[in-house]
Length: 415
Image 1 (cartoon, helix red, strand yellow):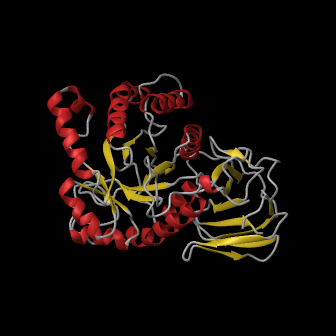
Image 2: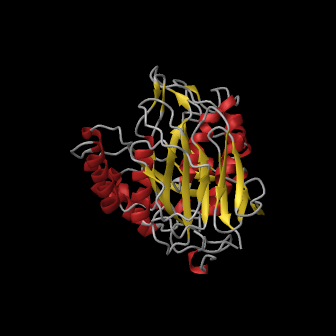
Image 3: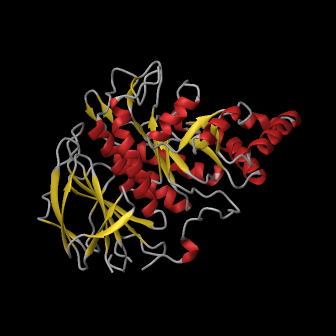
């Protein structure tokens, strides 16, 4: 049992268990999905995704049967799922019929409403989300947002990067009232690494916390233009574990398969790629660690070593430390971020300064080589094994961690 280092979670804050009937949408298992390409959802494709650790797949209404056969959940694509459908009585009647057909299907998880809307579209989308929620409160209405590097015209909000994006998020949350915040951000260019990844991740994390909803990060798994490179397995691990450290409960890859993209998870003929093999392990690690963190609150996401734009350094209130301490390193634009990211988690009522943390997710930000460090705390540590879902005594108040390139380890204060 975790105790206050950094207390068991009240029953009222636990996730809904299997067999319970929620009165509104609840996430259930943390999401592992992908951005859809044109690949039809056949039994073979769905089986490959299930074997690879994906648990939410894109489908049309007739394909929900395929989704169910593989024990998966489905994101529903349908031409009726647009705000224009509400403009006519005929459109509303057709949408009502669709809702009635799919909402009781055991494989149905959410409605897909669109990608990267500008702020001027939020009022109409808010009406559609409310309409769906009124008729089917148990299923998510899913939308995806722009990243920070979208321009003012795309966002529909004025100002510099931070000002415009904060306003975009504020309007989205207040007008659309989403049950989950999803966004995409692609970090790996052919000329180095992007400079806004942690800025974007931190802003989404805070918006989700303020709204009291989970968030999902769509990460890069291909190249679609000469300016973007195909990430390798270590870089993919970096994306997975940094998302976890900031509190993500959902992960999506862009893309699974696509005719105009290089890399991805599978060829157009359905053959798995090297990235698929890497994701096959990482998907299970993400789902397992995110599930362990699901009853908790993200209290802070901090950096030691190099502090990239938008990131926070480790505050004095934290009751643990790395030994030896990591020297500060100047941030270098387009260069890989160095050092460690530290995701701090604790009971939902904890203060957001990290002082009430009971759990720590430490991430090696060097995706090129393994790093070793020692974490020291006032109480004995336990470490989480994502393969078994079990906590294991880690050897006292000092625990040495050897972290894979881009990898991480979840610890908690032992009882």
